[in-house]
Amino acid sequence: MLHILNHPLGAHIITQLRDRTTPPATFRTLCYRIGLLLALDATRDLALKDEVVETPLEKHTGQALAKPLAVIPILRAGLGMVEPFTDLFPDVSVGYVGLERDHETALPRSYYQKLPPLADKRVLVVDPMLATGGSAVLALDALIAAGATDISLVCIVCSPEGVKVVEAAHPTVPIFTAALDRELNAKKYILPGLGDFGDRLYGT
Ligand SMILES: O=P(O)(O)OC[C@H]1O[C@H](OP(=O)(O)OP(=O)(O)O)[C@H](O)[C@@H]1O
Ligand SMILES: O=c1cc[nH]c(=O)[nH]1
Ligand SMILES: [Mg+2]
Image (cartoon, rainbow, N blue to C red):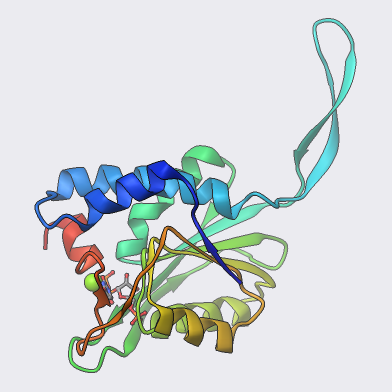
């Protein structure tokens, strides 16, 4: 199921991210701010449990988050989306999946993986760009192999092609995004897109 962010601030930020004149320092701030909106959108359905507290006046049964969270960035570009999650959910565990697309074939290659226990957690995979879907499917396969059962994918820009590929391979994984773009070009970049997210984030 695809969830497209429906907030005017999201539309405002994504236009600034697309602007080719936006320098890396501003790009990183914009990535953080849109990450906050997406983090809230992707966690709207988190389970709650009762929690009793004493207010200064009386005993009160409130609520607390019931299930631990893990955020898993797909390196490198996904790193820009981690801080919104660690700021909003300070108890979140962080794991890493390192993938890089080959420039000629656009096929992802895995070069690093370090994961916390995942079986008991809501797992939020973060990667700003969903293009062919190859990287996301490889990451989701690895997380399921590591024991994850409750996974969401959080992106900033998706292509229709990538959404189809992920939905075919992992139909139960919801996808949250700020924008669903038009198509991929011949080099498998998203149009209109915003270029290479990792390069723009890190000035490479
Ligand atoms: O859907 P796909 O066709 O697999 O493409 C999307 C992937 O490409 C980008 O990473 P990239 O390989 O450029 O690595 P980087 O983040 O280190 O720049 C992006 O962050 C995704 O991981
Ligand atoms: O458009 C694209 C496609 C893959 N990776 C990016 O960073 N941008
Ligand atoms: Mg890149």
